[in-house]
Length: 222
Image (cartoon, rainbow, N blue to C red; front, side):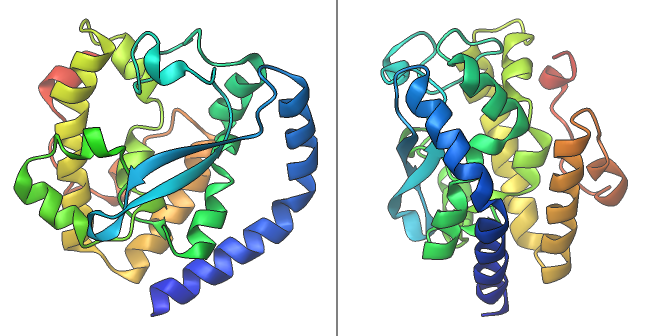
């Protein structure tokens, strides 16, 4: 109940504070690219229930059927010019505050995946994650905030890197979050997320969370 109250208060305040930004962004999106403002993508939520995750539209409409599908590359040609700025600054994620206010998501929790990706988790990890409300941010979101760069420099195809290396480690991170979850952990993750947006190259999470699962050796080269 405390976590849900915090979600309502924080998401409501953020929507009010950030509301002056929304009309200019909506106008720019309408006038550029393909004219779409929002993009709704099916994601797996608590209890395995699907919900529509809301984002600002940053890519071509048919992008899931082009190139690397649902995996985004570094300098991906499917990303629209203004969309590139929105993705780099994470502004494209702001509409998910509405998902938080509705109760589809929490401020902090496992990052919700599309059903096809979630199904690739081992059954035991799926069961662990299903009990949690997915989050706008979380330990996995912080560590893989520049996921496109990792997939592009891995020496594998983007899909191979994501499914063979990144996704299994993400699963371990989400299980770590569940086992260590406290309100204080959520507060620390919120502040680390803010710092990560300000300083994208920061690895400050390593200072505060020394017991994270070992980084896979295959990703150390990325």
